[in-house]
Structures are given as structure tokens and as C-alpha cells.
Image (cartoon, rainbow, N blue to C red):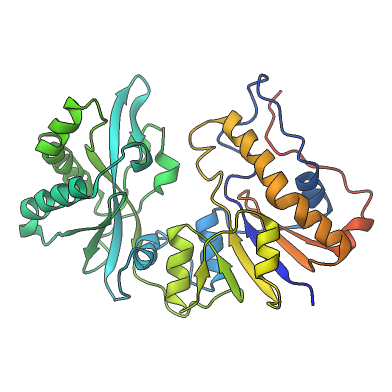
Length: 344
């Protein structure tokens, strides 16, 4: 029996963050991807990949609160499930600019484990009276455990990268306290010996944190497929929450099909281009589309045409899911859809 594939590719369709305003960067041909998008049945899906993952795992998606990304991703970083209210408190570099205060995330900071540990120790000593303790299981992902919802609503880190943070700061009934805490953290980190040493080495300072993704572990989640393949912490945390096994992402669709032999369905999350839109890098995005065309989309189209793949559910991060079956090969009248928003 041919399998079903759920394929999540955040950032695949270049909508919203940049159109294709740079004529020097060609829109990739990607005939297989265009075929899949044109021949599939499009339905509304969650607006973000993170919310899509929660829904696929049957985990509740709060309507007036953050997705509890912190509580779930912490499980992928070695934490144990508990009833605590967790908040991502990720290390960042803030840089004043003509357009405001711009954020650089930890991928560009090359934080060493000892640096993270020493900054966390300084944080814990400074804010012990407030009952705050910073957990740093990884240099690039930090967490705060709180006894209850502090009345805070936040923006995901990926939405703040390269942007002025001022309109994206935490909001809600307790926002004033948390803005003040953020200022104290910035003062503490700025004068820490770790940052003086980084400055001497011409490295960007770890001069702030980004609060986001607060909440408790959801209840009642279950795995959406027999086989799960993901490298991102949210999917791996959801898998652990459901006691499901999750494997590393195969480099090529052929590797996935060989490994999925005998299983009815699979979920694969490709993180290849998650940050391309955030970093306003259309050339990199175009290269990644071409790469995935070669390694994934061409194979999926061929297998749908020959019956080796029963159904593809493609989630390209544009708020829709495209469901393609073998019958798609007869839909000659379907027009190819654009991969980008082109304002020209």
C-alpha cells in the first residue's frame, strides 16, 4: 500500500516578508513544486508552522494566548514534563539602528556553553529574590519557569529577527513589569565579563534575551503519523510528549521512501528555509527552492504519477495545506501558481 506524506516546509512560499522586488534574483523554475501546488486541493491551515504542528498533534491551540512552545521545546532539550508555566528566554544581540533597535538571534552569536552558564549564574544571583531561575540546557535556547501565567503575550523569535523590536515587545496586563525586567537584564549582561571578553574578540555581545512562547505542556496530544522525521525542537518535543519516536530528517526523498516502507503515513519537517524570509534573503531562498526541488519535490511528483505515493499534504507556510493525490495527473487545466508575491 502506498504511503501518505505530510510535508511541512516553513518559508517555502515567499509571501509577506519580501515579494520578489529584486530583479537580479530569478524566480526558480521549480516545475515539480509548481505542479504540486497547481494540481493539489488547497484548504485553509493554521497561519504559522508552529500552530500547524500543534494541530497535527491534536494539541490545543490557544486563541488568546501564546502557543506554549517553551514547555514543549524544553522536552526536546532534555527536560521532563511538568505542570510549570515555561517561557522561552533566548539569548540575543540588540543593535541600535536608524530604523530602531534590531535583533540578531543566537545563530549568529556562536555562544559557548560556558558563556551561557556564567550569564545564567549572574541572572539567577541577581533575580533570586524575584523567584526567577534561568535554565540553559543549550547555549542557544534558554527557559524561565514560572508558577503561573504572568499575564504576558509575546511574538515568536523568528518574527523579530532583523526587525525593530519596539513594536514587538511583550504586551498584556503585566507588560510593564516585564519591560522593566528586560532593561535590568540588558544592564546586567552588558557589564558582565563574558561580554567584555567578547567585545575584545570583536564578537557581537550577548546583551539581551527574547521572551516568547510561554505556557504549560498541552494535554491530550497524539502523534499524527506512524513515522516522524524532524530536527527542529518543537516537533521533537511534541513527539516526546506523545511518546513517539522521531528520526532525523532524511537528506533526500528517496531515503525517506526507503525508510518508510511498510508504514502507512509519515510526517517530515524540512527546516531548510525557515529563516530566509526573516533575513530578507531572496537569493538564499531561491537556492533553497532549487535544492528542495531536486531532493524532494521531483520525487514526490514522480511517485504520485506512478502510484508509489498515495497522498501528499504539503504545508508551505502560507496558511494553507495543498493535498495532492494520484488523480492530480489528470488535472491539466490547473494553472501554475506563483511562488512569490511579485509587486511588479
